[in-house]
Image 1: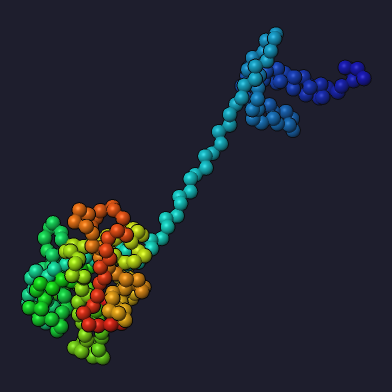
Image 2: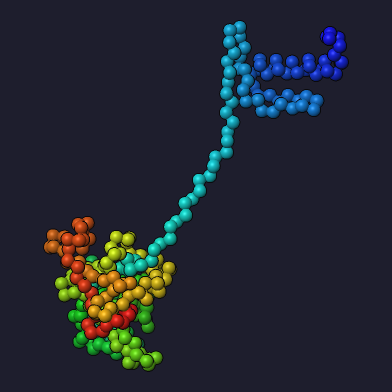
Length: 270
């Protein structure tokens, strides 16, 4: 076969291809070579220079789209007794609410630098004022302040309750859940098995997540008169004088002081 045997279109295509290849090798840039019915796209390796001794090859890096980091799902908050901030308190003052038949107003010292908490309690049918003042009680301290018949109440006194049959509550038996005599004002109430599961909830968290509705059904006085949560005993810690209640020392070296009712057994706490 001779050179002259090639048809004119084939010859033209061959010459055009050689010219394009020579252009790529001498200019060192990406090229798009368009031929009749044939297309070369995105040349990723080209010769950047040509000399008599060697060819230098250049890599062209193609940017790949970055993968977006997926946000890890937030683990659900476990709601249990550890979310309640229950403190030992002392009723220093009590008086009858001016506009409510069943309410007492109290000032209760729970060891805060800001002074006693003001709390309203529906205990008028169960305690006299003389019985209220000087009583050591347990106060749920991380409740939001709210007005009870106009009185700003910031907390709740915990009581054991044996409910009667009357809807008005006149035959209910209600009494304080009381701390151990050796506990100190401001001591936090703990629960066996829930000591190291996190900090108490904030006032807003307690309200927003309706934690009281989840926790309180499992708060009870057992058959021995001991306050329990899911059958685990509530207690305060008696530490040595050189260790306060917020110390990081091992709690196992401290004495656990049980929380009790006065005379009721197997009843709920509210």
